[in-house]
Structures are given as C-alpha cells and as structure tokens.
Length: 261
Image 1 (cartoon, helix red, strand yellow):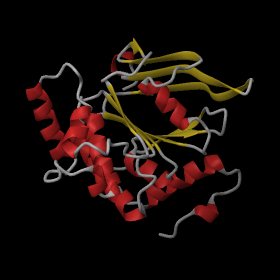
Image 2 (image 1 turned 120 degrees about the vertical axis):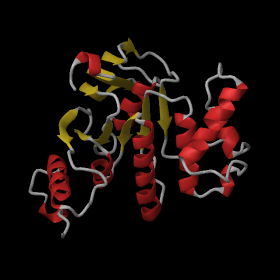
Image 3 (image 1 turned 90 degrees about the vertical axis):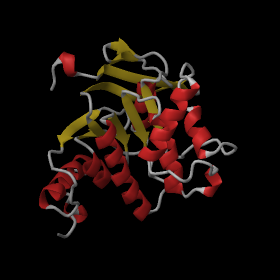
Image 4 (image 1 turned 90 degrees about the horizontal axis):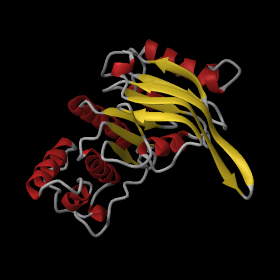
C-alpha cells in the first residue's frame, strides 16, 4: 500500500510560517504523510497546532513555506474540484434552497442535465430527499451539515477534507453524523481526512490516527486502527488505542482518562 503508484496524497517535508506583527510564527514543521486512495485519516492535536492550516494547504486555500505536496503526482498550488472541504459551520448560502446550495458546488463546465443528476444523487446520498426546497434556516444543524457534505462531494473529489465538521452539534447528533459520514465514505470510496479534537471520533472513523504535537505542529505518531467496522467504543481494543493516543498528550499515565468497561 505504500508504493508510489498507490499514493494519492503525498506530503513531504512541509513547513508553514506566518508573519504576525513583524514576527515570524512557525505553524507547521517537517510534516510527512502519505495517503492512499480510499483511506480515512483522522488528525488530532491541541488547539493551535496547525491541523486546520494543514487542511487549508491541502485544499489550496493556503500555501506551504517549504516542502512538497502533491495529489495524484501533481503539485497543489490552488483550489480544485479534485478536493472538497467541509467546515465546522455548514456555510450554506441562506437565500438558496438545499438543492440550489448543492448545485452551487457543481463544476462550472457541467451541463444542466449533469448538474441535475449529480444533485439528485447527492441529496439521496446524504439522506435529504424531501428537503430539496427547504432553506438552511428550516433545517437542523445536522441536516445543514449533510447539505454541506453533499455540496463538497457533488464533483466527486479525490479527497474530502473535514475540519471539525461536528464541533457545533449536540452529542447525539454528533454520533449520528459520524455514522452518516462513515456510511457515505463506504458508499463513495472517497479518500477522507478529518481534523477533530475528539479522540473517540478519530478512532471510530479513521483507518489511521495522526497525532500532532503542539505548535510548531509536527507529526508525533501515526496510530493504525485495524478494528473491524462498525466499531464499539467500549471494546477493549478500542480503549487501548484511546489510551495510546492520550499518552502522546500527557507525560504521566493516562489512567485518569481511562473509561470503565
């Protein structure tokens, strides 16, 4: 799985600096990550470690200071339809219906027939059939995020980037949305990269969990998650992976954070 021919996204020696008030801030340093087609990668780390900055560089909204990042062997310099992104807020256009919000994400060279077909397919994919004519304010937070995911997927991107997409949702809706994203991932086979502060979420969804250090962010450890799906959060092996990841953030034993089984 690690051969060059099977790599979809390749990040090598990537670093990022910002200039703030004439001072240089090192946000990321020496990031190295290889992602294969169809993988689900979770990224965890403390606030300010550069997780979201890394996603912005992958999607093309920002650029690295040094290092190389390629998708399918092509260097990334700007946004493209081969990458989609879902933010913490749904960011739907309030004056457009669900259908029109999703259609807004269609590539400009798609014909009207293609757009209609793609929009219909993705409305069904995210479970919003019957709400095509609803406006964002008429939807729950979870339904708004479903529409946002559909908009990001409508061009069939090679990579879908998810930046804390469930952070504003209540606990029950969050768990439901995790299951929905997993269902969509299994149906579409789209490579997904999730940034989250929720370690259980990272383990539940990811094939691998990338653990980042505090700023300047670098990759401390990559933890493989080989548990079969659907995953049980109270399962012994799940809890052991959770402890392993917690141990990367705390020098002492993570016993206070262990969950009773």
